[in-house]
Length: 69
Image (cartoon, rainbow, N blue to C red; front, side):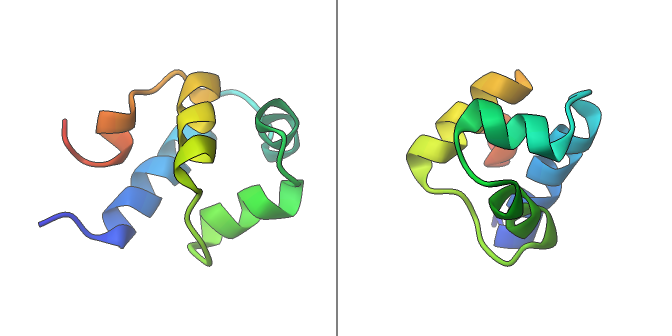
């Protein structure tokens, strides 16, 4: 069974290894830098459309983030 913590961990890992700053990711995805920070801390998870945009920017598949791979 997949947990929200596993999804958060994969999202954080992808953000950290992307080579982009959190501020740059926020700019590319069109959210605030504090929103990216909330995702990193696990305070909230992105909406589906934001998750799709994050995956494009981070060059990872949604299946990876959602622990299907």
